[in-house]
Length: 368
Image 1 (cartoon, rainbow, N blue to C red):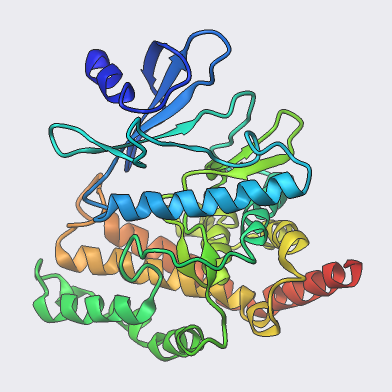
Image 2 (cartoon, helix red, strand yellow):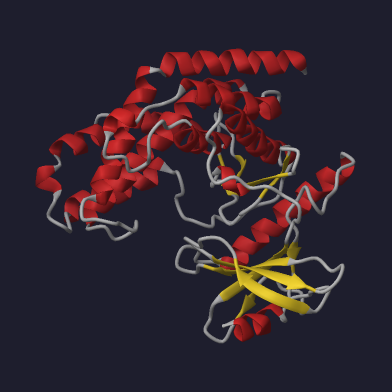
């Protein structure tokens, strides 16, 4: 395997001879390797991109190139270090952004940013604040980005698209489970109208479309050893959508007091402390750039994204568990119930969430 990887890596414009290639990370979607080189040459990240998840990898890589080039220009203009504060895509020796091997697999490479810290979980309010700052900084750097981006995953966070899939799943009832799920189906149907009302604001442009990361886990932000944000990484899902999707998805993971698939629902709920901390970090970077309608719907975006995840887990359970990997037969149903408990907690604390957003936005707008 190593010899094969060395042959693949050799197709890219490396600055030094390869010394070692080793696996890196858990690789849930892509297979990731670190390429060590001789002397003062940089090391590199080599990835086999998952063509089952991303149907047009060249277009995805073009998105990443456009976005990282723009960020690099912003970093240089601000007097920063573009090699540490932005991802750098490494082309192949013939100038392409990815290499296709003999098996039809797609490979891409970026420069490894040395001397950084990555966290697997935001387990303190200070780290949640830094996570919000990281995604806010990423969006702020792209606020004036004006190039078209490809849609790497069709209908991502588009609830109208999800409802089309949902209605089809109910019609087919592939696993013959629908009859036992009347209560859970009601959770989805009772909120359909307000979710479509929110998405209509995006469709008509009242909530603007901007550049979004779409995978806001804390481990997709690199920090320096002093704990300051360097840059966002793992940009496979970067595309044009509403900034609120990034905020809502982050809150769904950062502020949940339980696990995504927690069987003990008494542990699941929204932590207002973590919500406040992430909101502080995010709006410290974005308050001056977001329009009033975005600010007004920032808290709702957490409900929207969590609701979407309830729908997707339940839909996959109805379909017979064809999308998400499961560890036991009712895993998707357990996920559905845990996410619904989180959604209920958000709904119960929604007024407080809105107040936190409003006061934080006012604070940072006044500072500007």
